[in-house]
Length: 280
Image (cartoon, rainbow, N blue to C red):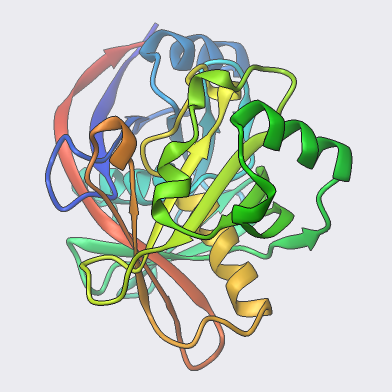
């Protein structure tokens, strides 16, 4: 057992405690896979991350991401929260304004030049047709009428998402997440436009029983996959703001923009809430 620096932070909300909580073990070198998984199960948060020395010389640190039940190759709010925790505890990037994170999908760049808002470069996303039988099963389980579905797809950027674009925010918020059961379903992403002139441009929900909950508060990796789908579909014409967590009382806000080089950036604010030490 060793005393290690530990942080809990709140990600993707302008208001502390209204985003998605993340546990971060800053000094994770020497921990076994079993110890990491056991600690992640104990924190009982959607994700717990572990910062390690990089193996890629271009990276600033290496990150491992665990839910209470499994390891993930990539996740969005753990990426921003871990980066903020690394900086908060004295981390210095090799290149000013950009942190390079090594994780299961390779190197992910994080733009820290606009702190307290940070943004990660959306990783490559595979897009394919959703299995028709699975699509029908999700529709029946969540009672989604066929006439409110605009598009569907299976998106993968580490996690795999069963993605539904619906006609309205009301359609997105009407879904009953308690109907989703593991292991029948993969993670489900719901997406619809807000009326023009409002604060936010889109509403997103992520139903993910694999993380031990029926709904994730705010999901950077899902928003990244949707943004890449929007880009491929020729619909990413300007920056947009996503609301997520509305149905569970969170004030999630995710910024999406494409730069002149075609890189899609997924951004939000991070707040350090708890700082101390963990004996692991």
